[in-house]
Every structure is written in C-alpha cells, then in structure tokens.
Image (cartoon, rainbow, N blue to C red):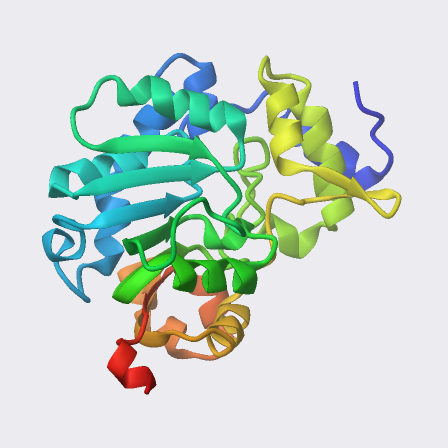
Length: 289
C-alpha cells in the first residue's frame, strides 16, 4: 500500500477505496462488461459528431487517407471505416494500446492499420495525408505546437486537422474519475494529493500498475499528473495562433444545453464546456505565393 502522506490523500482514499465507477471504461473492462476498445467504438459516433456542424462525416472521411493520433485501443479509429476512407492509420505511444487495437481490428474489414509511433515525428511522407484527427488526445500532448507542425508537414494542401478535447477545467479535467469521481476535484485538492490518492487507490485494482504507469509521473521530488498537459480553451487559442493553419471552425460544446450562455463568457466557459471542437486547414499552395 502506498503511504497516505497527508489528510487530503487519506480523505480521498477512504471515500473511494470501495467505489467502482462502472461508467468509466477502465472499470467496465475490469468488471468484464466490455473492453476499453469496445467502449471507444460504442461511443465513437457521438464523439465524432462534434464536427457535424462544420461538415458531414461522409464528406470529411470518405475516400480520404486519415491518420488518427492517440488511437488508444483503436475503437474510435475503426469506427471511421463506416465512412469508407481510402486508408486509416492509428498511432499511439503506448504499446499496450496498439496491441489492443490490432487485436480488435480482426473483427473489421477495411484498410486500417495501427503503428507504435511518436506524433512529434510521424513515419509518413510530406503531403501524403488528407486528414489528421486528434479525438480526446490534444489534452495529453507534451508538445502540441511541435505535433501540429508535424501534422502540417504530412498533410496535403487543403488537408484538415480535426481536434476535439475536454478543457482542463472540465468537471473531470484531471482525468482521474475512474477512481476519484468528484466533479472539479482538481480545484479543491492539490495535484500532489490527487496523485498520491490515485496511486493508493490503484492498488485496490488488478490493473493498478497499468493505471499508475499511464496517469502519474514523478518529477522534481513529487508526483504529478503527467498524463495531461492542463490544456485550457485559452491555451488552445494561443497555440492555434502559433501554427501555419487556417482556423476553419472552433465550437465550444456545453456540459448541458441550458449552459450554452455560460460558455460564451470568457472565464466561465472554461468550467462549463464539455468539449472543444476545432478544424484546421492547410492552405493551398497558390495561397502561399
């Protein structure tokens, strides 16, 4: 058992040591309800729908070469086969996720593949891809600007980057809700306390080692949530100004429809936005002359 070093950690541990969040994919997989990749696939149509106000999914993906960054278990990637892409390639840094994706892929027909790769240096030729997608990935990137520049390199002229992510101040923006489901918990407890509680709670799960490895890291003599980059809406807007893309679409989806007025407020939007949908376009060559 990890040592509970302070009252905050002890409180969180005692509150949730017997709690099982069966809405979370990690807990669902552990309970034998469905695998992580099955969960991804089941929710994929809803996840991809954030781009529908911009264009139909058929027009975005049909007969297109697609790279899905942060493919996870491959569920959301394989869901793109329904739109008849020319080719879809999922990439991820986690070897365990890639193995899951390759195994899940056996249930599908279509031109899909999965590779272990770093999005900062992707194994694709210049101007060889039509679409790059980052669904629930942007908030995990260690260097978003570098990765967007790499996306620009591999995209053909007029190619698109499709991004969707929950901002950091989302109720579950700390990404620890599988074990600590308090909404906005990262506003009330330090990141050190959250990590220590998460580490301790993970020991009550058979897959605890994998969860600890994925979500917590030790740096400068303390634990931190290395799984996330604290991506806010404001931070994303600043990043978009530093890359050579045309911003074609940016939409804030509220937590609830009734909260729509709140996401129009510069400060409140950070707390009441469910997800941010962004479409970036690489300029035509003639536009650059």
